[in-house]
Length: 405
Ligand code: GCO
Ligand code: MG
Image 1 (cartoon, rainbow, N blue to C red):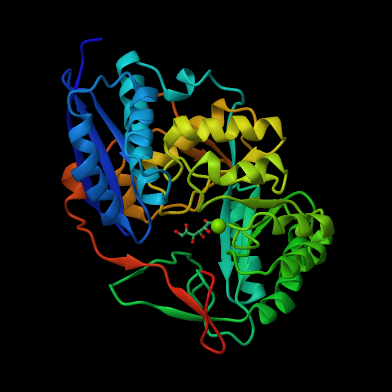
Image 2: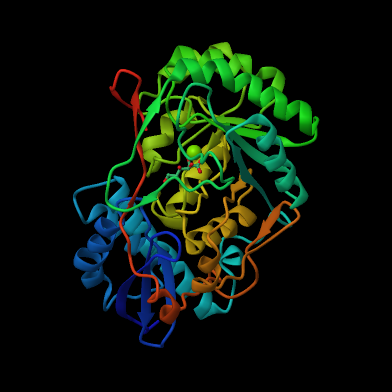
């Protein structure tokens, strides 16, 4: 193939929240897009791409996806980490997009073709009080969702991560450069959460998948206790129980509960999750296309997971752009041990800025059959939404100690 990459540009846009997109253009005029969004650290990845990777990409053969991945990963000397891996992920997805468009095939066909008709998805239902949470769950079920992540407020706390007292929406990154501090009390949460989730189960009956996210805030003992207390609720999974850098502690959690565990949204390579997988410390691995080095690397993580009967369930909040969301749905359609895709939804203008072939219907997703990833970028519209600093809150315990995010 004589085609070459002639440009690698970075577009930053904020249609309701910030997104960083890599645009790769070939000599033949084919354009591929990759998502490089790292919530709250967007500009670091943009610089990594513009200043360090774009000069390496121009002149390269876009068809050599794996070789480019190896060059960017091994060639930098510095490996892993979210900034590096999001940048590599963006290049990888953009090159899969180019390949699909060049060959006239949707990416899932290039990954071996569909292994299922559609990809199961879950969404969020959040509300401060239980009655409002039950209403939020009902609203999601009315939209056809068969799997719902339920989060509520905690009595005695003024704020809880990701929850708004009056609005049923969940968008944790606050616009503005100031740091938002929340107060957190794990004991209060543990006293309340099992009753909340029991009420949700009672309300929806046995047929709906329920999920819950503990946001990395428990000790191993607390995680074990919560998992045990939630067994009658029959969760699809309990997510991020501990800050999982110390993965051995999960053995203790496993010894005490059969509640399925899901971890991985902050991990960026197979080297970060191989222990979780090979020791069977989790049931679901949550690495995202964007943060774990793109389609090529996520597929390797899932291939390892398949051997250990661990299933894939990529992170899919609104900070994963429609580009890598689409890429994830292609992987989901073509990967046997892919269980479910998180779909939090997007602020309205996002769908216009990133017109996409992927679609949601009746609790499931499909990537569509457009060549490549099937997600474009309307650059004119994108320019109307300039970058605005936005950061996740931090949490302090009641005595003022900074605690896990
Ligand atoms: C999830 C995540 C989100 C995070 C967000 C941070 O499971 O969707 O935990 O809730 O808040 O992705 O960037
Ligand atoms: Mg999570």
